Image (cartoon, rainbow, N blue to C red; front, side, top):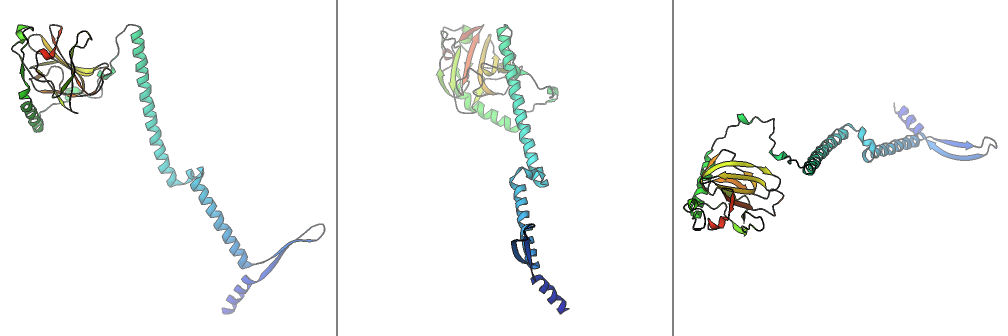
Length: 286
């Protein structure tokens, strides 16, 4: 057994000469010595080198798509990215088409299409039940208590006698930045306040309009007694809907920056009596 091993290793170390001759002149061109062990070693190094090159090609070249694990993760990510891009493009196309359609309506003297007021037909609004939670009642009581001191009495005798004894509530806790001016077609007063500040009803009444418009964003209008209407514009959220009965000081919206005519987060507040705009500062002590 030992002799066979010795003979085997002896054969591995035994060297051979590889000589290349010129076929025509029989002149030796190239010659070198090799053993079986050298052949195995060189062959092994060659296989390892080729394997490394192939692996690098699969990792750093487009051939990596043939790797199952890499293909699954990258393909999934590409599909998601492309789906998001397609969705964004579809939305941009819809917005562009609606914009062109409204331009066409303006040129033809037709009414503008208010797409924001279109309800989602997939939602069954008849099945929605509104309930007053405990936290909502606590919040309402806190707001009403905070705003009780903001009530003021109309002192301007130039106004209609029916309005002299009405008690108005401040529509929002803020500061007046733009006053009533008929010459500039500014039929109300602009207030600035803190972010997410609640908008309060100035008198008891019923909501007659609560929707979105292109120019002034989210609007809510309240009908009061004595043919008096209060209007609140540029809101971010409307808390009431048409038909709701509200009391003075009750939260009806959240201050915002909606609409094309807005110049920043604020409330545009108007008072109208029998179709005539009134200066709110004549009736409310800001």
